[in-house]
Length: 231
Image (cartoon, rainbow, N blue to C red; front, side, top):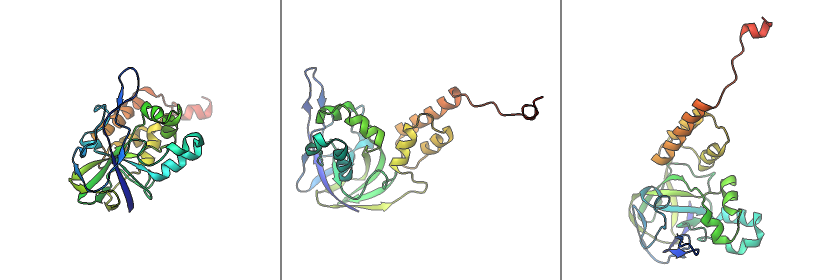
């Protein structure tokens, strides 16, 4: 269980070229309507990579902010809940404790973990720190997304309660670690692609990477009895 805060926000222009971001969020007070596409009033700049039913809510752990502050003391004062663009933040749940497909209850809504978040360059811009997104990716402090199984009213200060963990569940940490491995085992990639609750996009890219590795990574030629005898 985790007592959480909720955040939402509009769009902010971030550079002279007209780039926009929805990373700047505000703390929400009082009951908020949550639909299958997210919190009322929350906006994403690039809907190709953010938002939609499979990324309705982004969760980031308070503990992750503490870990990042230890690595980047110069921006520690900026590393506070809500600042990385998440919709939900709280203590007690992180990538090692949460699994793909986990079902949670928050207020009147039901949520399901769908995939990890892939950090982008806008995180570096948000904090003025060139290495932050890379560090988040390398360390697996990514946060994660929920799909909304049952819409309803939700509020900051409510408790996120685990209702169900599916058979064969895989932690976010394990999924991310395998994905970032230079040459992961194709069989393991295929197993991960079949993880219950994982989004179709992740299933596809895991399966495609497995196929590529099988086709392109050479394997040692098996030794024969002739090799062993020198014949």
